[in-house]
Amino acid sequence: MYTLKKSLGQHFLRDENISRKIIAALRERAVTQLLEVGPGAGALTKHLLELEGIQFKAVELDEEKVRYLQATWPGITVIHASILDIEKPFEGKFTVIGNFPYNISSQILFKMLDWKDDLETMIGMFQKEVAQRVAAKEGNKTYGVLSVLIQAFFAVEYLFEVHEQCFNPPPKVKSAVIRLTPRPAPAFCNEKSFTLLVKTAFNQRRKTLRNAVKPLFDEAALLDPIFNKRAEQLSINDFAQLTFKMRS
Image (cartoon, rainbow, N blue to C red; front, top):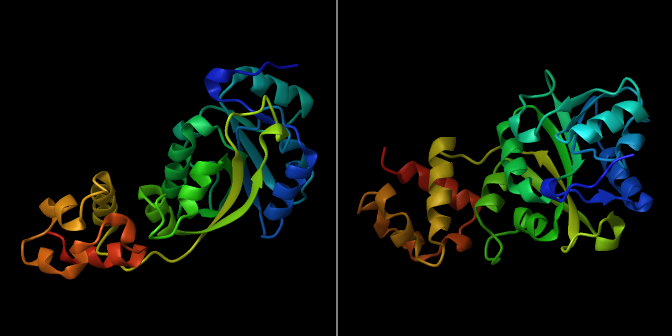
């Protein structure tokens, strides 16, 4: 059959009710091209392959799991690579789904940002703490770089939580499923400036914004009262508007 590899952060979903809830969430929106990330033993794959009218691909790093998937479902398209290393899997719009490896979950989310122009929906299982961080609003202690950069381009829905015992082996953390759907970006000067500002602000999140981002602004701009706040108090739109005042 197959073995579990701790080095790859493998925790395979074994609860059919959870699998069905994820598939139900997927079916709420039209899907024509679908990429499953980290299918592992196929807990979701077997349901995804039953969906009609969908071009399906999976990306799996573990060679043993690739062989298992291809033997179990002959004809399945499996990309043997890390999600972090592949180019866009389809031409045009596509959807991403998966029980994502928790050890690279933040990197996967940033990969979704790279694909944002073509990503229709992403439904993913993450460590609960990461899912909460992605969905957090300003003023929340978990609100940070990931929250702002993802929510600037995607609406985030915190769908449901998943108990440890739903996996084999049970992880030491709780899990949650979230959905990202594209939304119009805020009015910023440019994406590069926006990203730099957000990362710089949260790099010293305990300081006032004035002290945290001082090198990015002229002294006159720093007189604005908004710089008395800390990064976690600023909305996404606040960050976006500040990009117009940054040094060129």
